[in-house]
Length: 307
Image (cartoon, rainbow, N blue to C red):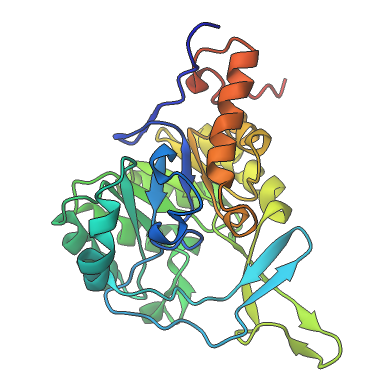
């Protein structure tokens, strides 16, 4: 093959030079990694989840390693949207990859206000909504587990922004396709899945939870089979692009997601183990396609044969 394979993809109107992005919460605001990885090679950078006001997060201990993964209860600690725009975004605007702001709230109004604020900011290419958050008005019910609640909060954000809108889905549901369809109907341009699985670890000597928050979110290679199944299910029923997340540590993992129907992927927990895992995955994808004379990554998306 004389030319390099084409890794570029378009997801919901967002053009990426390759389909490998960083997952929110695992890559800080990117500047923390600039001495470890060539940031300009990434497909997209999704920053740490942003709230209207600065958030301290949960008390420690809030991270614990588990077999084939890790459990976190960080509590969405972040600097807040105003400090992000003033202090973090100037660095990000100097990079080639599009910057995607991940947002969250505990009220629909918070999501709406965040979306309106970010819509007015140059240098942010798209919004990713984290709907795996408790809706305090609904007694703590998570937005992302109820199709009606998901529809309302996504529609509220959709009405406030013309930027591409990605909705990040929770796996802690009975049928993820119902939530996916509701998000699509409400105006999502793209879906990303999965967020972490609710889990816990116990210290057998103290007989106490290993996390101060008791439970946390499980991520890493242990969840990849669950994520793959959900991506496959959702990609079959929606008409908008799907981004696969969950346990990707090498190119072969990403390829499984593409074959199952994902148009792009996010790499998360692996950044803690191998800071340049994202560029390793990009190199691996290119090598895989070149070795098989496959011209474009698009040629393998959704090619899973189940018959």
